[in-house]
Image (cartoon, rainbow, N blue to C red):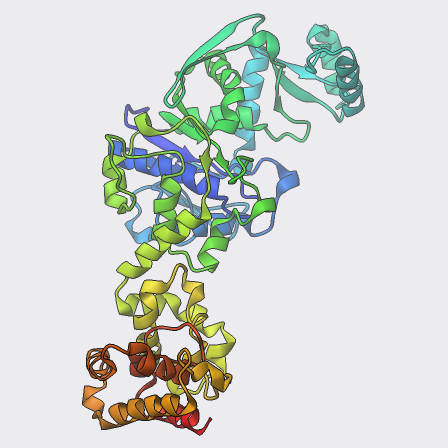
Amino acid sequence: MEESSSKVRVRFAPSPTGYVHIGGLRTALYNYLFAKKQGGEYLLRLEDTDQKRFVEGAAENLVSVLETMGLEHTEGPFTQATLQNATKSVTKSKNYPGIVEVGNFGPYIQSERLDIYQKYAQELIDTEKAYYCFCSPERLDAMRKEQMANKQMPKYDRLCCKLSPEEIQKNLDAKLPNTTIRFKLPDNETVRFMDMVRGEVSFDTASMADAVLLKSDGYPTYHLAMAVDDHLMHISHVIRSEEWLPSLPLHVLLYRAFGWDVPQFAHLPLILNLDKSKLSKRQGDVAVEDYLKKGYLKEALINFVVLLGWNPGAGSTQELFSMEELIEKFDFEHVHKAGAVFDLKKLDWINAQYIKQLSLDNLYQQSLLFWQEKSLYKEASSERQSETYIKKVLTIEQDRLNRLDEVGERNPFFFTDTLTYDKELLRWKKNSDDETKASLLQAQEILASLEENDWTQEILSEKLMAAAGDKRGDLLWPLRVALTGAKQSPSPFEVAWVLGKTESLKRLKKALSM
């Protein structure tokens, strides 16, 4: 074991129960930014001691998603760590074949640390700061119902705390199936603590119950495991959700019972739906993976999530931040106490700004998987599936995209050989058939006169706008409908540029025949 250090050490310690929640991503991000700004260490730890919530593959998925999001921890479980550069010990996880652990304070997976928790639980028994409880679930349930019926606060009545040493040993020898270890709270004590977000908070132990520390299956509860792990891993700051604030006095008392230094705590505000209810899957997606699959860029998600409870302060109106800027600006002075509303429209806007900043090559690479899933792409000719053609479409769509999964959806006419539309759509306002036909013939003549080298957006726009003069609708509306078959689309010169000369003239010919 290494000696303790004054260096900032923080951890993100999720339960691998299915997916990475948006709230979990924010907690990880705030830990990461704080550690980076302070020149400290950011660790990952898996809290998987609740075996009832075990989900096959969830641990590997969680680690992989965090790696994808760029929140690089220096210690803990990895799926694809660059092991040749590791300066700390590397071991394979006993319980998760797809994971390796890097660091000198492992294991970093709680289900692999059971003997450690049992040792410290026994230490509390030996110092009379905890006691064995043998009560059955049926008795505990009946006790709670009676307390509630009498309008009392439901909490354990300390029956087993009154057992004699002989009775305790007898029950232990009998290996009663419901044996747990409970923490013995001090009576009528006020626990005061300074929270980095909320300032001074205080709790009266009279309103608290003796919490279970070690369950009958030998697994610890969150309370014991958290305190033991954070102490042994030299965690200096515990940054977590507001939901754990009611447990703070228990955790502080646990540290004191062991005689350990108490880390600093920061409890982050809840993330809320638009109706101010707690963010939940009932009202939309809450998993980071879901947003990545919909075409949100990881950089945009990071930028959006950091603003769910924090702002740069000093009257700043900046809304887009690089990771380097976030590391420089982040502090807990500007983390809010009130809940933060998850506004999908704001996320769409932020994502659109990041999409606009992508190079064409990068946009093509990141959007290719989304193209390949679309039927309009699959059914298109090989020429329209080519990188050159897709990049031309993306050039037109880039400034109009909110998400990458929207590629092609607004402009399906780029991928079809057959347009179907009512010929009346070709008519601009009250123009006659002859006037409409004349406009189409004029457009056909202009396009046919251009050489392939002149087939650029700039020249197409220049020639068509000059011909249209003051009556742009007369010329450009029929041309756009002829090229797209739609009421709404990019400009006709943009569409013509993507389609190319041959296809554009082909579509004009069809319109004229109508």
